[in-house]
Length: 174
Image (cartoon, rainbow, N blue to C red; front, side, top):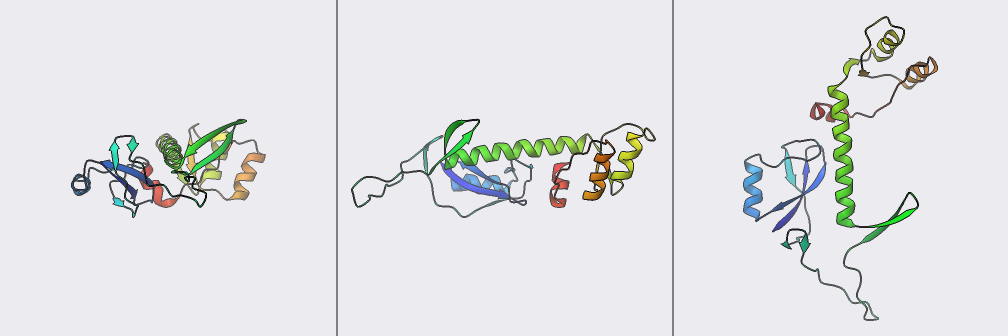
């Protein structure tokens, strides 16, 4: 089993598990590799330290270093985080998996927003006012507004949510 670090054209990083290097190359050549976050098929391998898994989900033990006292050092980094007053311990791989799941969830939410809203572009503030004052049909819209325009809309009682949307990601989200 070969495990490779991969990234798409938008630098979303994820792991790929393959039976062999040949299998990985064949899948890449046939366009079968796909980013789990944005669904891009432009996937490349990243430089990484070799890691061979004995069975799926179980890696061979890496060699351990001996400190001068003779005690062995930890094999994998462990990080403690506080969530809701409880502590949790995540290995580096678990952190990566959690980050990938969060990133995929955010991307899915952004796709839904794009698919369920009308893009009014730079006319956002004007169109939001028209909808609020019933001068235009009620619907969900998205677009660009300055921070001053957004503040003015909120002062008028118009609910506005500010979302970052990088232009390069917009096409992949639709």
